[in-house]
Length: 619
Image 1 (tube, rainbow, N blue to C red):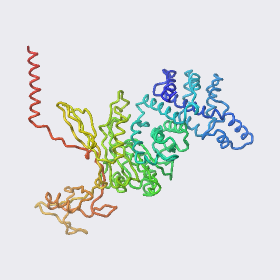
Image 2: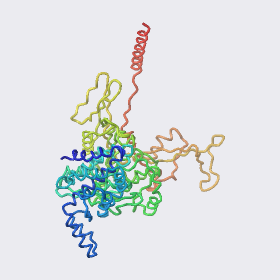
Image 3: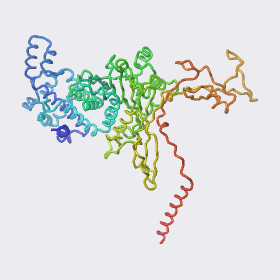
Image 4: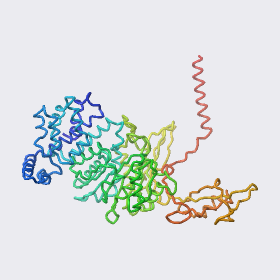
């Protein structure tokens, strides 16, 4: 039986639950029971040996855990004399025996069922007279590793999670990232390392600080398995939500991963993997969520540890903590001389441009760009996520850029690459097809600048998009339509995103229009500045400030001067350095208005049609 058939068979348990459980609650029964049956099957061959070892060590008053673990041959064990087939043999005591069986597992497994609130689910099933039927249905399934491998079981669990997310789409987006978005991020994450990842026996680490249900970790594992079945990806994660944490931990357990690498808690206030560094990192932090709850801890680390801590470069405004997760990931990068790291993180538009020069957001962007860490930013279509329709962007961060990428940032506008879904899931109405992912990864991997041809019909509606590679002919416009050529990929130098904000002062004038002089203090005798006439100018980093001032300011304000006292705290030069990434501005294509004659002709045609219709009605 393939994984699709097996997952469909498991999900058919929902037929028993209908009426007593709401559709979005089916997963609370199906997921923990799937985990339970898998673990039951995995431990079955060593069951008697484990029990014998347990009884012997217990009688000798010796700590039994390390001994039974060795006998089990797994990273977990169960010392209960029960298993699922035996549970069915005592229908009257099933509820109590099931609880006893769960308590026989090692601590990590008990933790999973505790965070699933499995005891509450069992009680509901018992009261609905469904506990025996559900337990029996799962006991019939052969989930032994000889029948279904860890890799296949992982795929089955992923399919169950997808169904669970669809059933509860009103809240799914909070903890569930669309699979095709993850596929794109994973493709971009591994693209530059294709040669290394195909080496036999290669071992790499992957970390997700906002692990959710473990989707990013799982898809990365599957992708690497497809590239190289003999590669080993050791996965690490942290998750705040209890149910999501339980699902993620169960998924890792099913895949044969060390579940101690998945930890609960708030990543920002309590780093679950202090001091660790990773080869690859992925994250989809919450969009636009304030970090007021952890403000005290974050500010304390920023002020006390500075650049030795995670948040040294700066702190964003409290209303949006997504950049804090990015800073956290930067602190987990391996040094370049130890192989370096690559990060894929999906963010909304705010981190691109929010915050003026000198603000926390600008200082974070400054740190990223001046340290040449931004490899690429990919703009995704709107309506891609379950709980929001806003624009989103995938940032690729690396401290091991290829030689030709150093000093440059690649921007890719993939907002027009999508297919509409047959059925919306919450706010999600669009999805990336495999062909779209392949196109984006190809352009990213080739580090190329590229245009796209947008074919419009006579009403201005988009018909198709064609990427204009050198060997691809531009498409023909449909009758009455036209072709619009726009950038798809642009490559810009790091410094092009930076400006120096200078303060322009104008004199305070008296009633006669003459400048007022400062009467006292260290500036006595100098012209007094008028705060109401004060202005600022943003000067490109590579441009000379004085030349800019003479060209752009003095012709319009001959009495103006630059306030040389306002200097950048880092380099000491006049003006405050700021960085922003105006993504949409770089892809804007000016379209001149239609000729008046053409508009007049259209109006005349419409008026003629109206008069004809009125004439027909009169007749």
